[in-house]
Image 1: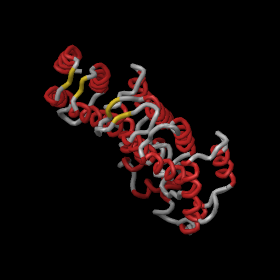
Image 2: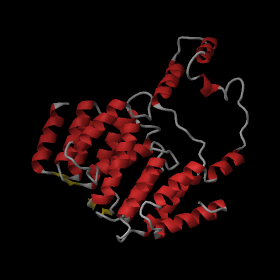
Image 3: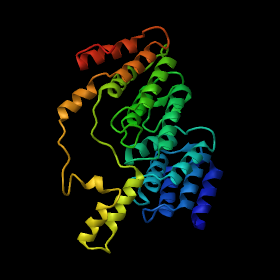
Length: 315
């Protein structure tokens, strides 16, 4: 980290306030080339943690800079590796809470931006958003607010973004872990005054978990690294390149593009199969519905939604 950045960081910590002008000064010092080095990332994150008075421009800069640093500044681009995921979680945990203005938005933005992230970060983001809905207070980046013990419109919006983020636990699909979280939130906030968006989200998201069909499955980072290595190798001839692929772990990824194609799938049949509630899903749903020995309004709405979408009772 250069001396001018160190000096500016110290000045802003002492002032305990970051204005739009301060943000522009930091952007010019730390990011003139569009790259953030590890020392600069540490300084920016620590400044965000230390200073409570922050302008909207600072929050935008913080989220943008950290997203570039974590997602774009290593190969293959679009993936967060284990080291950076661990760094991020340690930084967020350093003061024992998630900053609703910056860190919360960063977590959601990363999962929206990244192709895939480590499972540890997916689980961490899920646990953080659950804790925030139940206990968080304060403003969010988009102008909404966190309300402890209830689901506000801003919280419902954040939940929806997280649940359907491409780098989340189930990209474009709601995973079992996410559906379990939704039931826990529902039970914890049932008597509260919740936003209308919450009941819609609960029904649609749990219904998605039980009935949605998805063809998209992102490569994990290890596979992406292998593929990127092959595509970047300019030492071999075309023949040698394809010969190398044939003996590698990435060969199946190319089978439908070069050479033999797999057996065509009946997509309509696949969609219909996923829409049906199978034994495992029925067992899971029954256990969730019977957990509190009563059928509440959101659970009733869920059952009605499933029956409408599938043409058959859920249980």
